[in-house]
Length: 422
Image (cartoon, rainbow, N blue to C red; front, side, top):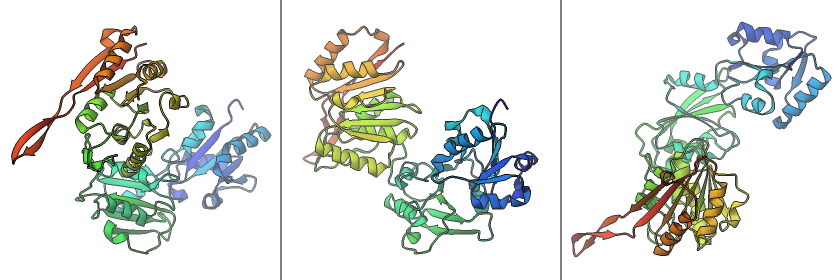
């Protein structure tokens, strides 16, 4: 045959009655059928004696090698792979599409376990946030708690219901409701609901095959639900909350609006300090990847704590000094420069060279020396005026003096944004 075909059949909850005619025909006609032992057993009545039954390899990552070996031995025969639920929904499809062409793959979708879970608790799920924690840190759930009242979580042994409940309580969601849907579609199916602060200390054991649904209806989440984190939320290198080597909220909001984060962006934050820019950048753009570069030990410690607090696992920290710490990073779509340690021209040269076409570079300056050096660097470039935007921010904050309101000015901050045109 011209194209080696891999048919991927979703079994839904394992009941062959849910299979469509096309899926039934594929299973019946396939030269070989591959799946887990449980999946193969579920379709046993559809298979004939001359059909080869193959088990998925362990580890699963060897599957592509196993399939290539199969086709080398039987180049004129296709194969049917069995999948749980819908293979195109947090299933086997991602793996297969990384290793085989679209023309080789035929998918036969079925009902997903997520869909059944919401059916069991009788909740519409079109606006639910769905997160997979399989092989991922539990903290990946954190950024979604404040602005997603309904969340479905695909879990593993590290993200069991009690661990999720503990995380919810840590961020003020004590009264959130968790519905644990176990062994869906089997004779052992069980759906139970708990309030987060009651489940934390409950020693109940749940079946490994389960889905956790979270309803954060009237819970008061302490995480931000809108851009502009309060400065006091961050760990800083100062004994005073909201002080230290951080970009304050007003400057941070302007900087992020100038950067205009986009899905799948590769971004650099150079001289990240305690990480207020990098953390909020990563928090609101979960599908971007942020690299924060900082060399000061105490600020690095705060940066790491802030990363963990807000669950921004798409933020990667490099403990180094720019520009030497940048050479191993992927080319960025966006760069923010918050500190240069006296190397402004060198860092600007390197970042401008590495920035992809259409990318955005934003740098802020507070000292007059920095502003002068930046102006001098810009004069040496051949950058059109319409690609350059200057902004200066002057902020005064309310204080008290002798019982009277006093507005105390902060040092003005100048920001330069440059768009790298093709």
